[in-house]
View 1 (cartoon, one colour):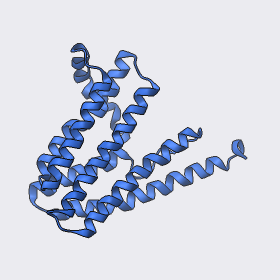
View 2 (cartoon, one colour; view 1 turned 135 degrees about the vertical axis):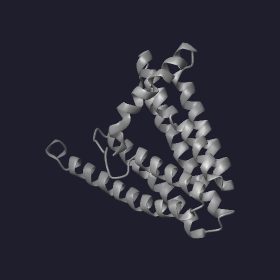
View 3 (spheres, one colour; view 1 turned 90 degrees about the vertical axis):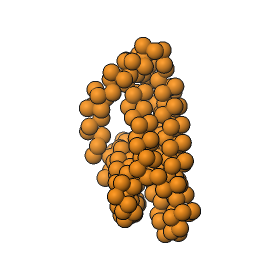
Length: 204
């Protein structure tokens, strides 16, 4: 759903991209720094229960995912390597966010249920990305579904931040339930989409 706003964010981040280009920073460097920032914030602050500041820290670096792509287009450097690097490092960032939450429930949060649920969200998030990547490697399309990456990230970060502000863990916990179900549905939707393409006339 949130993919439709990507053009808006690209325009908003354009001045930042221009500034980094003038400083001689490469898109790949932005990708690496952004991923490192997300991982450090999520795995350092979330396990301590610092959900508000952790969310602020992580969100600041999440925007690098838009900035690096904008820089690559402006420099005319869009390439298969850049797309591969961006997609690969995105998986590290996603895993760190849900992994950091899982560590909180394993330690201070002391909840085996939500520890498991956080890990389920992590795995299903990886599966939604894998189904798309595998389909595209076979020349088919598996985009779409009710919970794409941007939807999942916004949901968990916003509700985790709010749970930290208002000291209401239930906001994060309900979101984990919703994301687990929505991610599973998304995987199934993508599998069905690929199955239909595989069974079409071109693949008969």
